[in-house]
Image 1 (cartoon, rainbow, N blue to C red):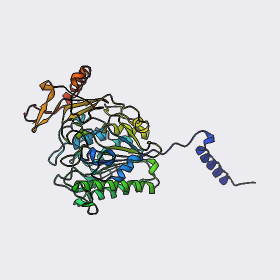
Image 2: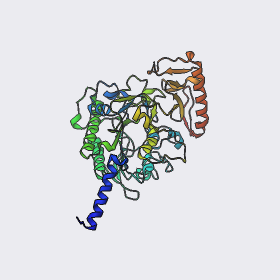
Image 3: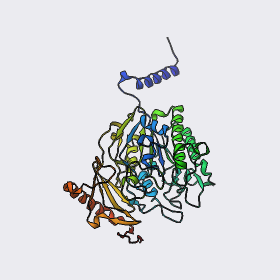
Image 4: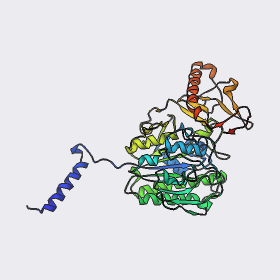
Length: 453
């Protein structure tokens, strides 16, 4: 039977395409690069989520996310405060390397994330559509503003925390496009963030995308969306967490509806521990409280069906600085090699419960090294007492905690393990020698005032 040339060529092309997907040909077309949705809550505590032991606030959607993905139970925020934590998460580097380790940026400040830093968004370009929606808090004056200067195609959100003034809601598309601004309707703010995020997903469903959804809640003050008001036993804080849980549920529903569920890695975490409200679980202290785990250890869930095992729990130590190298690896993009990265690729941890790629994690309070965490041990050098900075190290106390038996950090076992103390002292000295020259501020122990140089 004769067929036309055009039809013949179409049949050849079609058979080739089918062959590429056929097992008998021994290969398949390259899989689509994964989409990434990174949900970062503001001041959400480890104990605020049911999947991590919370009991007072119902979080059924986040708990379902954990059942369908992998939980990391020893995941640390990059810092115990907003600005340095977010800087570390975006760049894979400790914030002291970029001059952002000291306190948080406030409305009167003029500094920000150096433009020389490579963010996750920059690293994934040009293959990915990128957006940051929610709270920025890494600089709000030029050249550190808007976030579209850092590889994001879209920014919609706040310049800093929603308790700071003056405050407006901004939107920016590619660099050079004028910012638009509007007044903030606080009870509807988290919903606005999600609606804009959903629109970004719909607009870019045909290509790989990175969505950084950085909610500004449950940071105080709380502004529950009316449908969630008085729906929990944990006051307005609990109501806001319930709203966040609902947003997670809406996101997964939308990904399923668009057929993107299996193509999308969803990460859920927090920028640091809880502030004046919220639960740090059974961990010691809270946001800003030195190196204690209550300020650093945060929920972390990763979900991508058929790639991330469902219902798994991993205790390997990891940190927010690990997201950049991990997402680069998953996207098949090179990890920046022209600078020091403190983060590590934790793909094997997420996919097969492998051991941590970290030999240690450094825990800074402002620009000072307050603690070192290895897989088993935690060494704490300083804390706060009656509102002042106290250095155990200067006093001669050795505060070593066995995190396998005492994760609450209640009892030092330094006298039982002099070899571990010696190793920790070595680590501390080496880290201080490396990072001390990067400090811009001087801290005086035993109640002395902190001085800006």
